[in-house]
Length: 137
Image 1 (cartoon, helix red, strand yellow):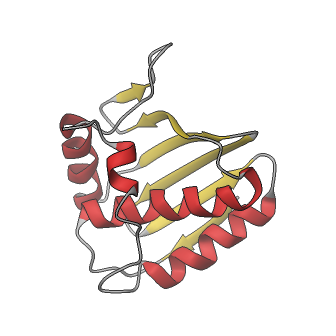
Image 2 (spheres, rainbow, N blue to C red):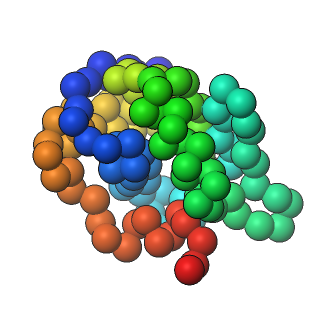
């Protein structure tokens, strides 16, 4: 497990999307174009899981909950799969941790990239990423 303590002036949604995007992007290095799947998200008050035949998407309700918890510095926990890789990540305040089962190199790459991106006023996040993890409007 690798951990990053950072300073960031990003709003909660941008912080969340930056973390998820770069976790996805760095895992894709070894897993190619395998689907990025949110398996589980845990907040202090709620647990969100994918239904058997459906993907877990960040609905407005889930996003509101996540953003509020990020704003309040409360802990969030994510389980993510991509191909054969299984990633556990957590965010609490300005501390992000990530653990990858298959490749420890991915952990280091995610932390290194987030160390750069979370310090920017405008982090680099592909415009097509957010629509892939949120439901179609």
